[in-house]
Structure formats: C-alpha cells, structure tokens
Image (cartoon, rainbow, N blue to C red):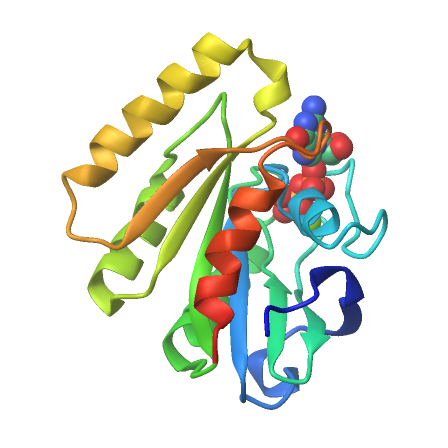
Length: 198
Ligand SMILES: Nc1nc2c(ncn2[C@@H]2O[C@H](COP(=O)(O)OP(=O)(O)OP(=O)(O)O)[C@@H](O)[C@H]2O)c(=O)[nH]1
Ligand SMILES: [Mg+2]
C-alpha cells in the first residue's frame, strides 16, 4: 500500500546521529542549501502547514528533524548548508553530522535535493550529487520556488539541469516545484512511492 503522506507526524530533532530514531524501515532525506525551501517542501508534500518549521532566518535548522509517515517510513529534514553567517565551528559540526548520517544510515533509501530554481547546482549540490553517484543512492531534484519565474524560464533551467545530470552515472531525476502554488506535489509522491515500496 502507498504511504499516506498527510499522516506524517513530527518525531524528534537530533543534534547527532546517536539521538536519531532506530535505524529501521525506510527513510528519505531532504537536503539542500539553507533557505532553498526544504521545510516548505516537506509541509506541502504532507499537506500540513507547520509540520517542518519554516524559517525566515536562513540556517536556523541545525538539527536532523525526523518525521514519521508510518511505522516503516520516515522523512528527515536535514540542516541547510551554505549560510555564510554561521561560524566556522558550527559549519564543521554540520559537516561531521551530515557525513556521519549519510555514511551510516542503513534506512536511507533516497535523497530529495531541494534547489532554488534561480540558483541551481551550487558547489554543495554538486557534492551531494557526487555522493549519490558514488554510493548509488537514488536522487530526485526539486527546482523549487518555480513561481518566482515565468514558465518558459523555469523550464529552460530544468532542461539545463537535466542535461548536466544526464552526463553523470547517477540514478537521478529532476522536476520543477512550487510550495507557494503547491505545484509538482503528485510528481514527487510518485517518486517517493517507488522509494518507499517495501
Ligand atoms: N515564493 C516561494 N517561496 C518559497 C517557496 N518555498 C519556500 N519559500 C520561502 O523561502 C524561505 C525559506 O523556506 P524554508 O522552507 O524555511 O527553507 P529551508 O530550506 O528549510 O531553510 P533552512 O531550514 O534554513 O535550511 C521561506 O521564507 C519560505 O516561505 C516557494 O515554492 N515559493
Ligand atoms: Mg528548514
């Protein structure tokens, strides 16, 4: 049976992997630059307004936030990267936690990489793509805030991103998304249904 995304509930926030829920079932992680729109995407995908907190101040979420969809399936809202005002020590801590999570989480079955359609493929985005290429982890890219561009411009960026990805040896798909207009939700659910299929 397909997961019922709107039943998602907040579980806990972890400042390190040892505080995470038991490593069982399947888990999809949302990664991306600070302020890209990860938490907003989780909220629209679960049809809840305030499940994942939306920050006006970028870089506020420095924790791994776990959401339970059902007993076997979870979302993880990963802390955003690349916010300049964060002190170096915090950046290092962030790096360590991300590495630990990505390398050691058996339940992790796919990554949703969220990018602002106006600033796609930052250095960190590329690192994440390379990581998925290296570990053969399925990856789906959301070019979000597509409401900020006209359709033609957004579509052009999607095509460019898809072209660059097609040159890589990685199982990756990409789409336009808008949390504001709730556009692209069904398309993401289709991808998640496949990853979560037990
Ligand atoms: N216009 C528009 N604004 C959006 C969209 N998605 C998110 N935003 C806005 O972008 C800002 C950042 O959104 P968040 O969802 O908090 O971003 P985040 O990636 O979770 O950020 P961090 O938790 O800091 O890493 C907020 O002010 C949102 O309202 C969208 O699809 N369209
Ligand atoms: Mg967030």
